[in-house]
Image (tube, rainbow, N blue to C red; front, side):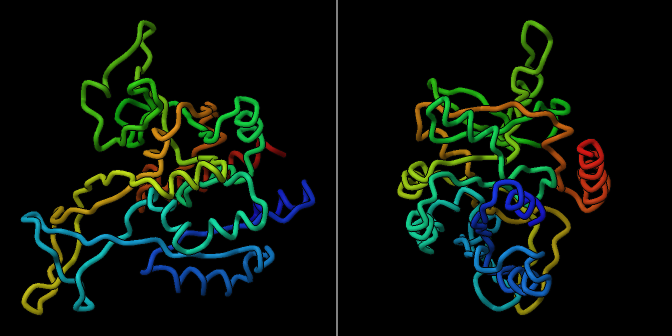
Length: 281
């Protein structure tokens, strides 16, 4: 909200903000925003919408029961945003407002540029419908998706699906061959979102540790025990002949929150964010 307020002051326009939530956190998110008075941003320009869910399966392929006595569900991943935007009429609303470009970023990166004018200008100049900002991987085993080409089209391979051979591969200069990170800083033309919302993106399987009910007893597993099905936003890239890729600077563009403590935690992300702000003064 601070970044949107700064953009409002700089460009003299209030940018609509849409927040995709899940059934399990929608009420809490809306309550939090109301309690914080939307951090000073005009409330009428902020809208939350709920994404779809998929059932979780145990390691034998059977449905599991949640603590509420119902089949355990989980959000279907960030790639479900396109269908959810269509189903919840967000896409129709954007079109009625004359919105042409939509930036889609993740909440777990404190340095994401929600108003990325450089990325927008580059996409317009190159006449593409999708643009993404990247950074070079910190090391071969960093847990980020990597950008590559397959059948002459841009795609991203999620870190859980990258082979050891790909991780260790280097080019003639000794640099990582698959080192271009997808950091969830994506810009979509509204027409691209329309196309993606009517195409079925594939599901990826993630092995997760999830509590469940069995014989009226809560089971808290000590290791991964079920499978979650997720769509990823970057699978939409393959629907188009080309996309714009802008390599950014890690210290300016990537302060991830992946862990509760230690590396890539709120503590390290805040430090990176504060360092970035200090350099702008």
